[in-house]
Length: 353
Ligand SMILES: NC(=O)C1=CN([C@@H]2O[C@H](COP(=O)(O)OP(=O)(O)OC[C@H]3O[C@@H](n4cnc5c(N)ncnc54)[C@H](OP(=O)(O)O)[C@@H]3O)[C@@H](O)[C@H]2O)C=CC1
Ligand SMILES: CCCCCCC/C=C/C=O
Image: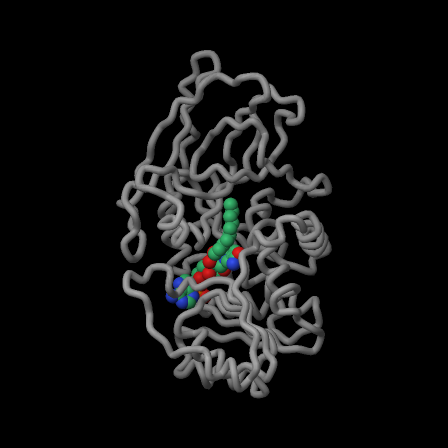
């Protein structure tokens, strides 16, 4: 790893999860969506609840979350799949603390998809054990980032959607984030020239350190169009778009003929109450004969192991560097989520319970 985890300044260390134990009674804490987000999420949109967990039945296990992920998709998905009062969606690295299921050993770590909660009971379905070759020295939180869903998004988006080839020029925005930082490093491994854009000078410095060829702060350049042109006067073969909106509208005009655009995310639009209007993509698409493809990482669920093994190997070999923005304390989940949407994270934003 290039750098150790960054601790959010001013974060309140989390109190240990409450265990009102009589025999095995566990009281889980969970964050629920109190009110659907309207514009930018507010801490008042969330409520912290306590849930008493029942005793384990045969075949079940009790898990405690150790790290939880805060991801941009939670913002648009909340409207699509959640109702007010639901526990916030999300994934965690969790440790098995009790097991009445012979397939799962106490002490093992898994990636689970059980939302913003400190403890939960599972029958084992859907739990993903960390790869057996995971080195003891490697932070398990990386299973939510570089060696997890965001890393897989970079891997499949570049290989299968951008179809990058050695010698090509790749553009990626939100480049210092969980997906973008992996996109740039994989593109370098693949023999490409990489241009990245990020929203602070610290992020720009980090991207240079991990091998990006050209980087700029999109918030301080006078003209995005000029900055993109200066970074690659011949244009771009591949554009891995994490941002959408105005950035994408400008960048599309700098694509080379037959360029490929992987539409991965549109974070600049997730908090809009009123949808943004054009410019529209058709004219550059036609005259540059571009391919533009939206994708969800889940399309390659059947190749998850392949992707994770490749990412783990590159991380262990030091070819892919990782940075994490660790917020301490389950109580700070909403703060960490909102901070990530504001761009406060360098690398993957996670919460340590
Ligand atoms: N299609 C798929 O399957 C998946 C898609 N995604 C998408 O990939 C993108 C990146 O996700 P992830 O790496 O997890 O998140 P990041 O770790 O990159 O965190 C989000 C970053 O987005 C940037 N950002 C926030 N608001 C804006 C804005 N208005 N304009 C430009 N940049 C902004 C900020 O960086 P900065 O300081 O540079 O502005 C912020 O740090 C998201 O759009 C997400 O939805 C993620 C996973 C899977
Ligand atoms: C349970 C994890 C689901 C991950 C799906 C990620 C799709 C992301 C889309 C946009 O951010």
